[in-house]
Image: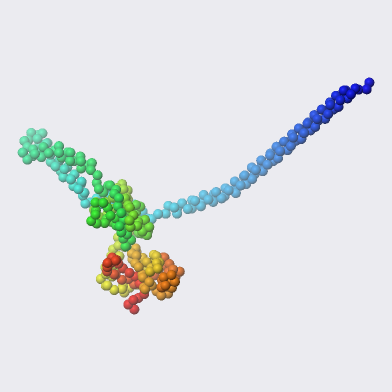
Length: 356
């Protein structure tokens, strides 16, 4: 029997459906194959990445080790500090005298309290006190009150006050400070009592840290002549260091004072040459350090001609900044000048022998 038209159509549809299923199966198979290939590639890449990371780790390890060794080598440099002065702390700090008003009053009251206790002991033993002795005993309550008040009173040398820098000393050993309650005079803040203290080898730090007009928190010492930026506790602990630094500056100040007086007495240029070190070069001259930490000005007319150059802006000769630099060593004659309306008495320098 010949198949009808409907049967032919059904057969054709079945055939097309079968072909579609085969195509779908092939596509799914290809996708599975691609996934397997990707997994294989990932598996192959993983060991490579691990090898690369391990290699990089090996490369970084020597660098890290070298960095650590370098840090270890640098540590001693960080610890390098100026010489320290060891010793036990001192109760009360650098100065333990003269006695303050509080301490004097406490001594007086305690002496009277001891006398009263002795009189009370006599009275307990049956002795009859004289009228003047009785009068002393009757003052006991008032003395106890005064004693408590003075014991709780705060010492001036333990309290910080706000001061103002009024003068940077030359030689550069400290600064002078104006403090409330001490209007008649300026008080000295020496290098040894700054916070932190300044060693002689670092005396230039004084000028870097302090300028005229700067506000500073200070304590007035017992002598009412000096101040410190250290707390009382810090001062007590640092007494050995403070005294050690004072020992560095004292010979320099003594030598400076002796030479200053010699120049003052002569009134002329020094006969001897003095070693100087250039601190700054200005249009009007050169500043130099002499005698350790005293700064003197060498004006243009006292600078060697070979160190001068024409200044077109000022239309005059000025220091050659390429020929003379800060830190340069120079030989100077020195002279003392008296005070005038503009300047205090000072010492000036010259690279030229004016007496020749």
